[in-house]
Image (cartoon, rainbow, N blue to C red; front, side, top):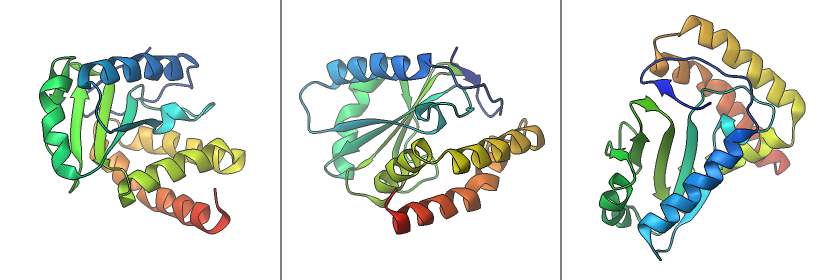
Length: 173
């Protein structure tokens, strides 16, 4: 199952249907936006087999430059996404789908730090079970402490995430 009330923190055990849901949404997005120069990746915890996660599929869309994202807003709204602007992160177009949030789109430049770090973090956790388990334990503890404070939950994970990105950069994922 996917979907979570906005602002809430509730983790689900890994669901093997999450990659299938991403693949369906990828196809829907690709059809909606037509033949444009984009890359689409499944990121976040739902993209890491065996990792608990908020049941929201995070989708990373890479575009050639930030301004290109504005031309895709109407197409994405047409398939149920709500455009939220940068939503607190500079140079990112953010979209959310559903009253119970089912999908988030983070649209950034393909070669941006945001793009590179999200893919690097995902790939590192996919290949490092010990760090994946440490992250799962941290997430479970923080989810208890920040049940109704998604920003607090996200901020409390930041140091761990940064440490994993640094480790991945040093050891090459």
